[in-house]
Length: 79
Image (cartoon, rainbow, N blue to C red; front, side, top):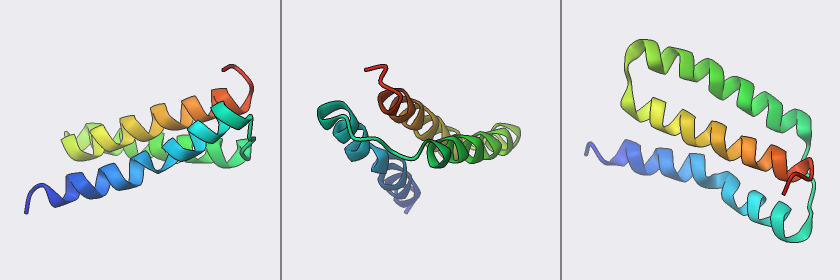
């Protein structure tokens, strides 16, 4: 049963991958405010996860922040 939260984390945090590919392949634009709010929220969660030394949430938040930063860069035309 310990692996189920990790599967859930992967499903949630990797949901931005299709959007990243769309931005890279087609130049699709995504709402910058939504991306920034998501990064901000994940950063707040990260503070708590680090304080609690929670490996699951540290991993998930890191993946989410990096993925959304890539999406932001792609949306802004850096790729």
